Image 1 (spheres, rainbow over the protein chains, first blue to last red):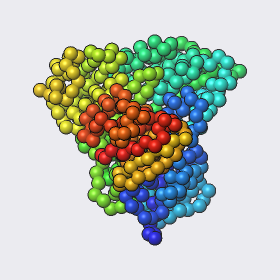
Image 2: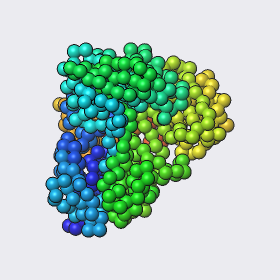
Image 3: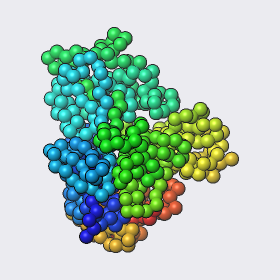
Image 4: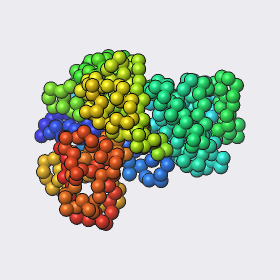
Length: 412
Length: 103
C-alpha cells in the first residue's frame, strides 16, 4: 500500500472527476475529497434547468453514486469546510480544527455568487443566488408558497436567462433586469443577444436592458426593486445572477500566486510545490488563444481534472483543450465552441432546411475564434474541427445557406 | 426491469439491471469505462458514445438528428452509433448489448 495521500478541496465537477481520473491513472494512494456542501456531489448545469423545473430528487443528478466512490476507494467528506492550508508541513486544517496530511493537494474550490452592494438587498425576502442544490431547494420552496409568483431576475447572463426560462415554464411572471444595453453582452455578439431577447419575449418574459438596480425595499414579504432610471418592479422572489467571485482565499493565504484566479501552469500546478488548482478557480494558459484565461464550465473542470491527475502520477501532460459550453433555454439548444473575445467580424449562417437553426461564426481577420450554434449541432462540430485545425474558412460560402454545411464545402 | 450489457474500453463485459433513467446514467453510476456523460445527459458533449449490437438496433432505434450531427465528424461513428444519454431504459431494452466507442 502506497503511503501517498491526495487531498482534494472541493467536490464538484472538477474535484470529483479528479478523484476518479486518479484511479483511472492507477494512483494507489489514499484519495480524500472535502466539501462544505453536504449534498452528494451533483451536476450543476441542471440546477437552473431540469432540476429546477422537475420534481426529481438531487440524487438523480449525482455526479457519481455512493457505490462508485466506495468501489474506487475514494473518501468523501461532505459538509466539511477547510479553514487553511499549511503548505510547509503539507497539511490542511479543517474548520473544526482537525488536520489532514497530504502528499499532493488539489484546490477545486470553484467560485461563489457575487452579491452586488444594492441598498436594501440584505433585508429582501426570498432573494437567492443560484449555484448550489440548496439554493434551488429554497427557490422551489419560495415558489410553491408564493401565490402571485412574480419573479425579478437581476442579471441577463446565462444563469439569469436559464432561470428565467425555467421559472416561466413553471408558471411565474418573470422580469429580467440587465444593467448593460443588451443581454449576454460580455459573451456574445449583438445578433445572439437579439435572438435571446426575442426568444424570451415570445415566451412572455420581460427582458429589460439598461436597468441598473439601485435599491430594494421590502414590506410584508413584498419586495420592490428600484432601478437607477426610477422604474420599479414588485417581486415575490428575486434571483441574483450577476456573476461570481473566485474562491482563491485558501490558495492566496497559503502563498500561491493569484491573478484572475489561482495561477497554474500547463499541468495545473500552482506556484506552490505539490499543490494543483483546477476548474472555475484556475487561471491557466490556453494555447489555442495564446493567453491566460479562467473558465467557468463543466468542460474545463473535467478536462483540467484529467490533466492534474496525470501530472500527480508523474506523467508529462499539457492542458490544451478547446473550450466548449452549452445553454438550454425553453426548447432552444445553444452550443458554443471557442472563445469569441477579440473578434472583429462575424458570419451569420441560416440553414435552408430548418428556420429554427442558425449559427454565428466569430472571426478575427480570417481566423475563426468561436461558433455559437443554435439548434445546430452540426455547425458546432464543424466549427470545432475548423478551430482546432486552424482552417481558413470561405466566408462567402459559409454565409450561403444554399451550400450544405459540410467541411469540404466551406474550405476555399 | 431490463438487463443491459456494456462492453467497456477494456473489452470487459458488464451486465447491469435498471428500471428507469437513461443508459448513460446507468453506465456512469456503475463506472463503465469510456462513458463519461460530462454534460449530464443533454446531448451536448458526446462523451457517452456507444455502438449498439447490430441485432439490437431494432429494439434500441436509430440515432436522432442531433445525435447524428454531434457524431458527424467522429471517426468512430457508424450506423450503429448512439449517444446513450438519449436512450431511456425500458423493458423493451432487456438483453441489449452496447459497446463503448473508443476515443
